[in-house]
Image (cartoon, rainbow, N blue to C red):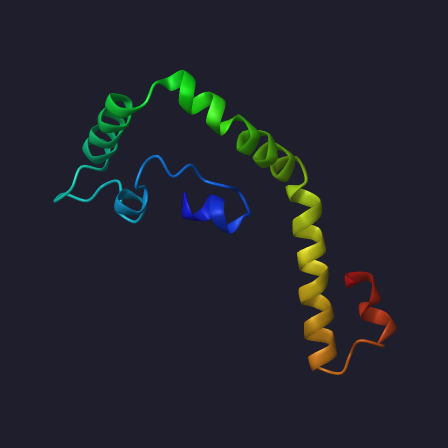
Length: 101
């Protein structure tokens, strides 16, 4: 979930995903699946799936648009990083690197 947030996605806050997000799947002391199951059972004891779907729909649409534009956003970010590196190394005006930005 953290990785989705880092990509600019809005992550539902119905579940405290921070608890299980960093637990490795193969951790012997913890069962990530059991933690997720408990949280889902708790969630559905408090909320109806229809209410969650209606509440979450606008965010899902926004996330879909972000996902569709992910490749172009990554390309722009890469170009910005290249410009920053070339500027800091005084190579921004070098014609051989202009294809990178």
